[in-house]
Length: 295
Image 1 (tube, rainbow, N blue to C red):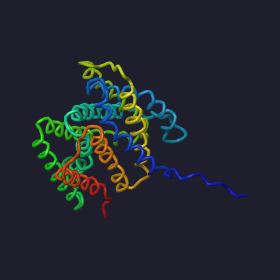
Image 2: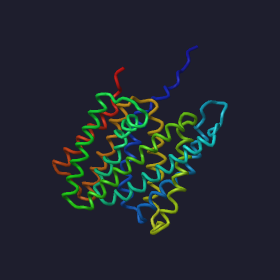
Image 3: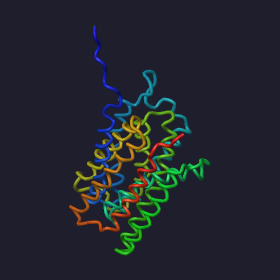
Image 4: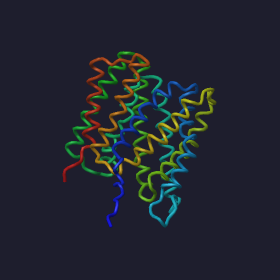
């Protein structure tokens, strides 16, 4: 009797990656639409996502059939998860502040600088040697970021400050990625993401309570929590296990493309030729940094 084969686990990885990237691309727009302060919108993004993520963690976050989602939670592991959450809180704090001070395209591009900051972590902290392609990625990124910052400085000091905040967000996000990767050595992706999200919500609470905390319109912050944190991050966390680094890198470029389109349509943020050139250099760096290394 013939058996019906089940779909491969990664069959839906590429559509999930594209969908997740597209969901994240609308995050900066939702931050501008929210009627609360940028730190409050960061808090609500995390806090409202916590129950959904823990539900998904208990439903799908088992390493095997025998152990529960959060089995093996040693103090060191919980500390790493807390560090990841605090770093993610720092990332969201400065990024949300930067979103209000620069273009949506720049905010998304520069916040993705973690892609080429990770090789620097490997070089200076782990003592790894960079490949030739990684050096090219760093050079392209440096040139592109310098050009974008120079153009922002010419436009207004406010734009330059926004760009620098988004670059600072990339530094925090790099710390988050390093910490969460160590947590992933024991836990699956969804339990790790749930606990880090809870920690970041706790870290953001005292910062967010300073002003404009309670939304009058819950739609933007709820869309941030569900669209960006639960659906966007959740789909990407699922997809990256089944896709090559190059495909992941190219898929993430959906974000700045959509953000640039929204910025041009909704806020009249039409980039000029030098902005296009600087963005192209950063995009090239993102692609090169994710190319698989030759052995």
